[in-house]
Image 1: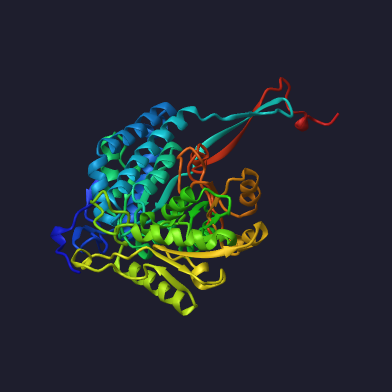
Image 2: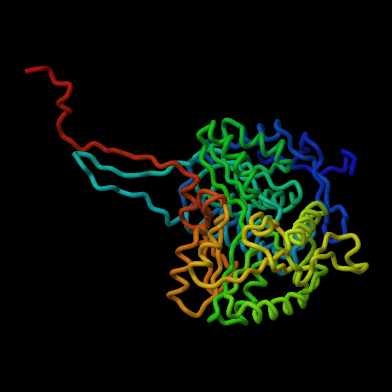
Length: 496
């Protein structure tokens, strides 16, 4: 696809809107394949300029000398600006990545609330006065790390970006934000809203571009003091290797193959709806999607039959239609990847209980739609059960007892999330605490609060996002010793 240079939209660097120097970045509507916008993408020189402007802005008195409540006031205004444009931003995100309107609206509201939360948290954060061990006062203060690189994925624009930008600004840092090249539009809108809210120029730059160019330049830049990345595990490993040479801290929120577990004593109606939401909302394009379903053998046949019947009633279609459950997948390559895994499931001996194909009809001809798919008959060691598909594909497996399901649930390199459905609170605690997962849901799934920390275990990531500690992850502790002794240190006295 080619676009005239004169038609390319600008990007946001150091408070200025100007064309990037890199290859064009094109936002495509996955509903019908139409072009939303073509941008002048960022190259390594654009990233370097954004970092340079960030360093200067961080150390300028207009930001460095602000008291916490003054900084919080600006951050809160950014959230208010997002909230004031909820419907416009939700519709823009719908065109950018194809999620149904109820989801994109929720993500915009979440982003607004994220800025509000971190503004409030900043005003109430306290330093520590530690127990003294001598004739001195000891305390801890916190200083901003420096310029932060935030690299966000295409599945939840603006919400993911807010979860990185808001705490980093609250910490006193400057942020260079690199959104996915597939969904660049919401990040640029965030730059516009932040500028209008009075954020000093240079504290936020937005550099849309490929990971191989803009992302790599951001990770490698010597003045970038932290990377916060959400995306695939292999990319996260590559970032970690590069960061090791710089001794640079990271927050990595990576892939998942999360188990959901239904015991025989569960409320089946609640469990069925929760399981369907956990895997098929967002078209399954979610790192915390509950993509492996373990059902206790005593209810397996009944539960799966009811689950499949309900899955067949889910509506795939226009994300603007309030009756739609699943919109299109993000792109044709992503759909092809999902299709390849369904074919692999068949080759591995799996039985397709529903879905497993593209929906038919003129309304789907130009989009990247795929039906919700449920597979059974596979071993937990099959590739389809071990590898992240990132699409609307659920594998169901039976289990016998707690020991069996704990072993199977933990038999994966990932450890992002887990869901448990049971009426026995003691069982929920026993099983939940035995499974390696950063987030545990009991009789619910895929619920979030910005005030609650979010992290992954094993190959699902490192570091913490959200919560009050989210601000501290962008700061460096500084220990202060304040001498109170009235007498000079005797060490330097002349010998007697």
